[in-house]
Image (cartoon, rainbow, N blue to C red):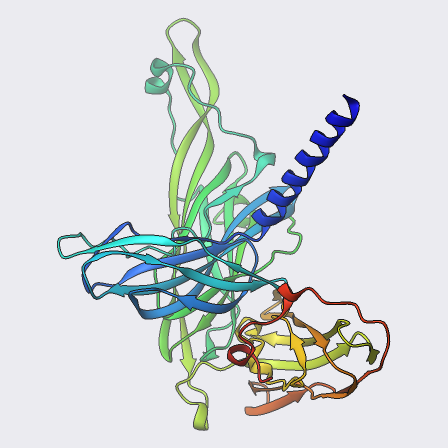
Length: 453
């Protein structure tokens, strides 16, 4: 009986482990269940880790535009320390050209070296269907929840009579929301650090419940990791405020001219002092919950076009270096070797993809989709960090393999010219010896579409 119990326990553990591993790789797709004929609608794919798009299959639907990449962030702040988790959303505009019910097979992404596919979605196309309201779609979910536990939860009225007789008021200067920009002039594609601060009077506390940007096609926005934030104090017009940074984004202009950085709309749950008149207990002081909506100030930016042949395009702009590393220079056939290529510096690192590196891998090697590791944050007025691409190379035969260095061209705003960065070339010696068969699930099935192999 003990052996039977142990066997059941072992099976349950294996099932739980299998479910957990698969859940980590799941990406979720959604679209309206019914859409009008020949009218664009939004199809979104959400995943908890940033990935590289491998392939797309929209079935009978036509791609209008996309993808645009947005992020949804949940933030908690305890004793001045900010923690956050991020969901990445890939948004496409699709259109149905024929009436009927059709299935969108999905999008495949490479995440940490594994290829995952979104769930299929069924959509009905009809002439009589109403068009969904997309004016804020894709932006409402960028920052759905921000919680600050150290302030506590606002208390609720103990009775309806208490609530009717409570004096709950919030002045227009009690809580302020201000946005600042690291620069007011930039090149198309150049990153701008936008910082959002809340100014809260000493006798108030609040939770940020919801936040969303106004819709825009002028900027591509990306959340930045907040470093440890300490609450500061500031006096404005005789009022004392507790001030803290609760959000930073990188805004990359996609057009030229005078552009407006989209405003951030915030809904707060404010815990305010209130004087309650109770029929039995009389008058006493308490706290009440009050909802407050704020909108950040407008910021105008002058965006310049890149010079020469790159005018009118959104190129990678900044200052970068490139390094690489090969895990080993000798191996046997069918053994794995990892090539890591890292781009470091300040600028729009998010735009650099594995394909852009232009590495011509040897023909007799299998190369997996790379694991991409990004560490991007704000450092003063600049967006800075690293982006590393980790390619797994599996040589199938003996011999000497030449792996050329990666090459990338970017616009350097300091010198006002385009520059080229390169990484080191490598030679891989594959010698006879005991081979270890590689897992065929890691082999690229569409290498020609992804890399120059």
